[in-house]
Image 1 (cartoon, rainbow, N blue to C red):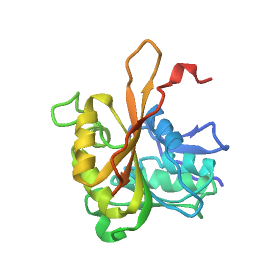
Image 2 (image 1 turned 60 degrees about the vertical axis):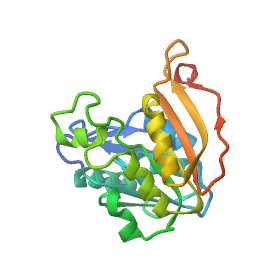
Image 3 (image 1 turned 120 degrees about the vertical axis):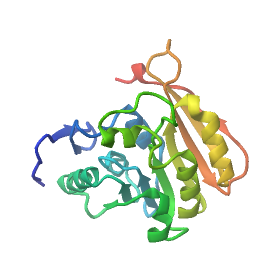
Image 4 (image 1 turned 135 degrees about the vertical axis):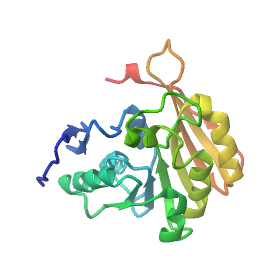
Length: 231
């Protein structure tokens, strides 16, 4: 389906299932972290999946290419949500993906508790005082814990998930202690983690995490994913 592009927008191929997304360089564009998370996460045929901080909608679109799931994407910034909606329509996925505008902080109010089987999230990585804050507000919101932090993400996810539901997250290794503390305080038990390296001689740049709401303690550490080994 053809869609109209606004000034500054472009269409980028996902090299997966023939799908593409609309992006604008003035906003935060997706990176390898979103691609890795979509590959790491899983959803069965009729499972209800919510993608928090969905941005361009790339994670639900990529997960649709894998098979199962009925998806909702939630995005705070209306300009990004609009691009995501048009990307969904462009790929013919309107029957499987819905994009909503809103703040994840109170998302459990309008979705209701126990509403999703799976949640995926690529949250802002930088805590207060961490890293350079972009002069472009839309990029700052995506990168820094300005409108929400890791505790907010975990607390809201626990309210939205059914008992035994799964949260899939990508984050930076240096925040892993913060992530684990936030998960357990929300009764989300880390079950699997996988570190991601850009090259085998470099330290991990990302960590992928699966947690289960109400799960028992038992953590599996998967083999490191090395991106330079992927053709």
